[in-house]
Length: 211
Image (cartoon, rainbow, N blue to C red; front, side, top):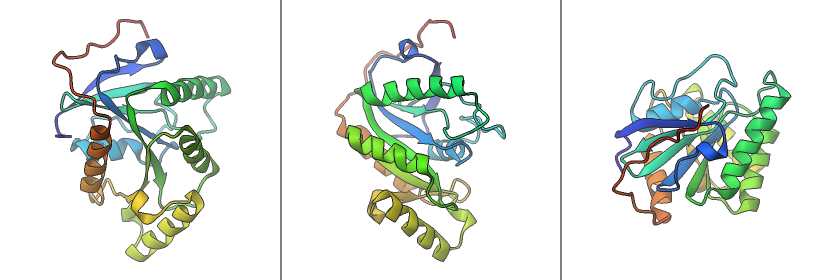
């Protein structure tokens, strides 16, 4: 899997705008400002494929990227930002919940958590929900470069305990230094391969529904 061969495909604001279930899909979820956009950009070796913003809550759709004509990366809206209206939060929740619960080609949900901070309730609830659904997930602790090696290990151990994880079930990551990027690519390729979905010969076109 060549993660460098990537392009933006479409933004889906409703279920009907999702592309056909033709490829395995890796979804990326995380609280606002945990470095989700930076992680995806580093993963694919690009600087601005996913636009970063100083304004949390800007992403309001499921953004699809096609990798190597055989894998979808799906950037989900960030959660946990209080300034987003209740109506918008409910809309996001319905779209994300429906997607995760019913998308048959969803191979893994990458749950992105800021390594610098204590475990947040919403992060634990998301992982508990994924466990209850039986959906594969991979916690990735970001911004590791902001901490010393000893502090990385200490904070990671605390997050592991709160999420009932072992060290082998998650990754430490830094978009700035590249720590963990190769391990992440390998893990995601393995998740994608586990679905057994072959890449189709024809290219998928975006839906024509107006946004």
